Amino acid sequence: MNWTLEVVPVPVTDLDRAKEFYADRCGFTVDLDQEVAPGVRIIQLTPPGSRCSLALIEGMPPFPGTRGMAPGTLHGLQFCVTDIEGARNRLVEAGVDVSPVMHVGATGWEEGKGGTWNSFLTFADPDGNGWVVQEAPSELSER
Image (tube, rainbow, N blue to C red; front, side, top):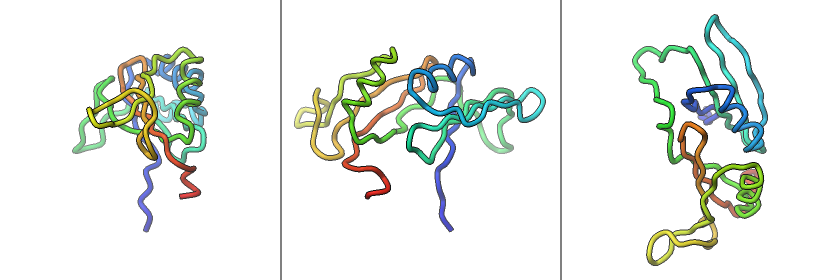
């Protein structure tokens, strides 16, 4: 039995603002924007080439025995791209506040690209949820 990560809930305060950010600025595809039950709206967006989507949810109570996340508390999840500089340029052109490309060097984080698997950038959505983008040497299907 495979265990696949296919949906990541992202806690936001304003679904329409978050939808605009992820769809229009980040270029993610809107797969679903629907009221799935009275007062429960879900917007599901998928990054280009990904099998894992983001879910922006409003009005859904936490599953029994679990806790919800406050908007802006999601940090450290990583997207992978094969061209970190191209990804950064795309985000900057769309008006996203993006860090410089950095790598881990002898003194800690240093500006510029590193070796294989060692080039990163960060950005945050309007609520402050923080994302890391890492450069991968090839597409996932080729690894």
